[in-house]
Length: 67
Image (tube, rainbow, N blue to C red; front, top):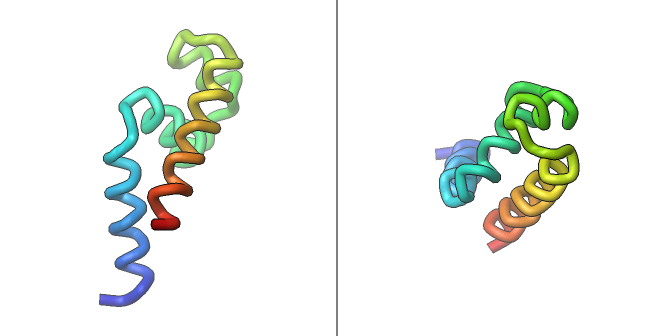
């Protein structure tokens, strides 16, 4: 296995470890490339909630990937 495959597997595991409400905003933003405003409408949550969930999700992913 290559280092790239191992990194992808670690990222997938890290994503699975997130609470669903964090995983969804990461997918909508980074996977589907929706704007924060679009995510807010899709999830029917305030824009600030989208921002905070995405920030927390990315911080959690960073922590998991660093360890």
